[in-house]
Image (cartoon, rainbow, N blue to C red; front, side):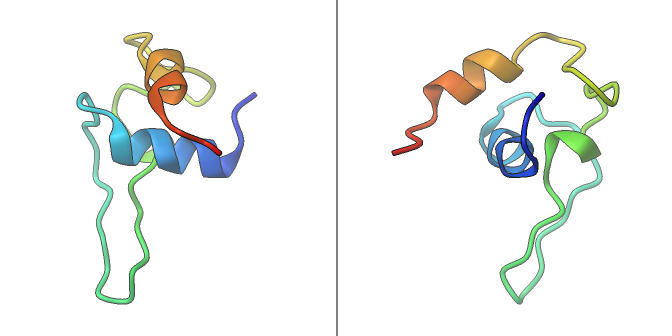
Length: 59
């Protein structure tokens, strides 16, 4: 299961993100896999989550 932080990072980095997420002037963001139309509540419907996550430098 992906963490909340991973869902946010992938949502921000995914070329296929399609959702209602927004950014605020305070630096907050509502962009996450959880706000993407391709997320079914447990996984990505178009199977790009893992490849986007692997492409992120998480050091």
